[in-house]
Length: 527
Ligand code: SF4
Ligand code: SF4
Image 1: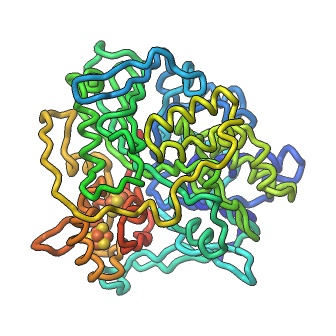
Image 2 (image 1 turned 90 degrees about the vertical axis):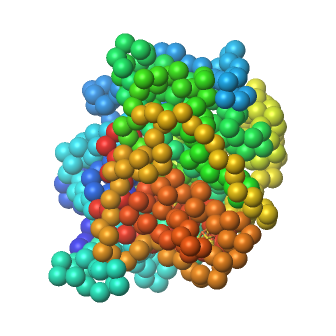
């Protein structure tokens, strides 16, 4: 058994901000930073391996955490110098929105790979004396008399039947005075804790699946710092979906598409929608002559203010995406994640109430201003845009009531009567890879001889699902993990990107997402 003062689960921006703020805060208070043991465990192979984001980062989050010199050295690829919004009407038609609303503007903000940013933060944390151990999945919280007192890491070296192999390593028990959950969106331990303690927010959390590629383009054809956001096609006007194109350098373009997972048509295939988005004239000109070199996917918790759960229980605090801390209008959460980490650190050091400290952050006020925006999009794009405009004009005063949104269970609901989707033809080319080629570029890897981490609870429910919905997991998974072969569901778990879409979207609630052995999964290096 290992003992530490603080155990942080997850080395993303929120977890590392907590760690850095703890060490720096202890030193500033003269509490003896060296004596405070802070341990970070992450299931990725390296720091940043499982981190993916847009990412145009609101730099305000780093203030108070990093020094001016450290902020200046952030691994930023470019700053936004030209920004546009477009409504895509169809593949060939789009309309430029003549004016970027100030609430949405990112002019001057850094464009970065979040993988690289967290690697940078990891380096700073280690210099401060934080212990970071990667390749360890934390699979269980340890509780005593209702207080979280530590966590347990998963076993390694089991074969596919669950028997121990010669390289077997038992899980490790880590006892801590405080556990900080920084697992990211749809974190398994976080969700279990919230469900077990009834800590849910006032509205159920809703998610979007975000799919992203990095495309290399010929030098001299594009301009670093130019960014474009789109909404509309290929989403219908009742579904919250949109895309982005960020020119991170003269030779690299990030292209991404997010699609709300509360869709109800079982034939929807978010990866195909991503490719359709890329095939739009207004989008593809940004990477003409290019070649996709990296790929990834993750879910974004976009429910916003009313979906934030209780963020603390005895012995445990929840920070970042795991607590749904995201501005659901700008779809920006890195700065709020960092602020939540700093609030958590202050709470641990001073004994002050974490929830009150979180509510005093600028990020919380920002979320409150746009608290009804996401729910309004539930009633269609025009209503959502109107609600966003109203929130901006009145600084969040209107709508003054809680707009009803999704109810519990709605997110996975699908309509009966599956009809196979008409195949969509795409121009072949190095910037339009198919799903499996993309998965290869994510670098994802799992030891094949281990128990499958995607467990089907009841095969009979899959039978019913195939009849009613045509097995939607074969379409909503961005990594082609689920396949039907002779009517049987096959699971290629080694392709899994750990995006958790299947946990959210299986209409029968039939997938139990458990942890593969630590170190497995995507190996993002520049997402
Ligand atoms: Fe349907 Fe879920 Fe079974 Fe896939 S795993 S066939 S989505 S019930
Ligand atoms: Fe995402 Fe599930 Fe597919 Fe893995 S299996 S990539 S978690 S949808």
